[in-house]
Amino acid sequence: MSEIKQVLVDQRARLERKFENERIIERDVPNLKKYLSHSNVLAILGVRRSGKSTLAEMLLRGENFGYINFDDDRLAGIKVEDLHKVEKAIYELFGEVEYFLFDEIQNVEGWELFVNRLREEGKRIIITGSNSKLLSGELATALTGRHINFTLFPFSFSEYLRFKGVKIERIKDTFTTPSEGVIKRELENYMRVGGFPEVLKISEDFIFSIFSDIVYKDVVQRLRIKRIELFKAFAVNVIKYYSNEISLSKLSKTLKLSNNTVEEWFNGLVNAYVIITSERFTNKPREGITSPKKVYVVDPGFISSIALDSSKGRIMENLVALKLSRMGENLFYFKGDNYEIDFFTRDKAIQVTYASGKDEIPKREIEGLNKVKARDKIVITWDYEDKIREINFIPIWKFLLDSND
Image 1 (tube, helix red, strand yellow):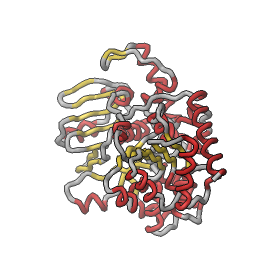
Image 2 (cartoon, one colour):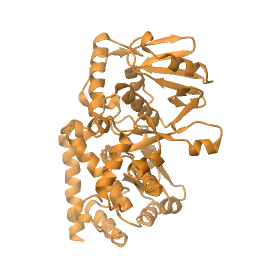
Image 3 (cartoon, helix red, strand yellow):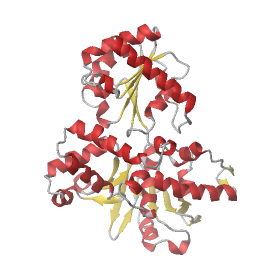
């Protein structure tokens, strides 16, 4: 009991030091605290080191809350039957708290019923987790719908600018010339270093530590993978497919792995939020299932540092995928005869191309849009803006700074 209290006190002190000494920015998220206006569970999910804990702490600033981070090595091996000791220690240290914040509680097997009991007792709870399976299975059953989940990404481009202290001058969607120049320069940097908060605070080299941490803690340990080096090679290979279709069967042949292993490892990367997938848009369910998926990476820093790639057109497409995902869109691409639409829903069709002028835009991009029905037809460019008939041409930096994040 005394050891648990020591952990709680140390963790709370670190939390307070962080808010005193570090640069903390507001995130572009909806009003999440409204989900805690009554007893409920708010799950903030997303890739490791994306700022989930900091966001949760910001939501509870000014409240008396119990806090414990289960990613602490001193808590390794803690059992579900020990969670009542954690609860008791919190009450003894912080009084009769209404709010609880549990970081990475999925490290404790069988934690679901403990959290549900607290909720039934009228507590308001935030949990964070680095795996999309956190709210599946027993938890979904235990909470019987009394939970909200929100996915947090590393910094968006607008959050990155805010963190860097870049002042933007604009009226509606028209930017001053100096602001436009600064934005474009910073976008080049963002495409290279990405938006992981610790990378921007500490060093660009920190991206390698983050990647290793995710691979080991959120995939290797969870799936009990024995061939760790082979899995790392697999993960790097998958990232190199960013903004492209990926064939898992071809990958299994290349790496001499079974189809089941490749599928399990691939899903492990999806569940750990390392990659996001886009499915083929079709009215034929079987065709959608059997068609290759397109892959996008959760942060551009992984592309430049892990995949060692700097293809601007593909990175632009990856940024658009992340923007749409932040907006809550499910990703689909469309394939017709001799053309493809990068992103397609029933009311929106988007092409992405690295072009700074009208003449640089490949004809196939325009021809593809002319062949589909959609309320909004958009071409995301590097630096060309116009509207020709029903097609809007929007520079990538303007698209990313649109306030719909």
